[in-house]
Image (cartoon, rainbow, N blue to C red; front, side, top):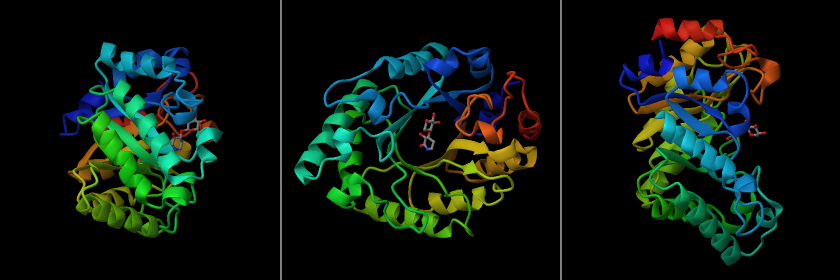
Length: 300
Ligand code: XIL
């Protein structure tokens, strides 16, 4: 049985995973994706440094590969990410002039979101813009433009791909106790931005969790949903140790929140995971399903 089929049978839109051309070429990765998951997010190939390493020079191959993979195999494509302080080329992070930075953002988004227009179920338009205390992260975007960069980015994305659900995505949105300042800042800023006419459709909670850290996921998603967005999602789930109870709690959190449309796990096998030393995902290095995978199927 497929985890995606079981999850979507409960009224959700997808249960997905991440990958790029390199990981999809390894072992049984594609078989596992094809058989179990209904959605794919490119892990790195759509990020600014990869896709536009120097101004106006685009490297489409990796992103095209994943977009084609999604089309060919009937997978929902979540596109990731247009504006992020990390994996950002120096020619962008060194801009100090407002007009120049706005122009660079608009050109980048027009080109990248334009190329995949109509193919992305969702775009993570801005990624990781808040600190854990709820203040704005000190990125080139915030330093030069203040919070206006959010409006510039979402308006450009809307223009380039009017169909895609436009998301703001971040980590440490997992709990109303220890992550409360960030959840509150995210929800109140999004509410304010939507009221100001900025076209934000969704909030993504990455959910890179510690062992035992999933119990508050549903309550936090519900607080994010109350900001007025039309949907929320768990966008990059991985949990240190991958205890079945932790995965059950996180996925149940999405089931419990009506606006939560889907869950994306961040890595097919532990060996491929960016947190491989934590063994945080659902298949082991030998492509065998782990106890958390079986537990989720049982739960669903
Ligand atoms: C990670 C990838 O998994 C790694 O391969 C890469 O080296 C660094 O980025 N938040 C995000 C993701 O939004 O894009 C990051 O992905 C993990 C943290």
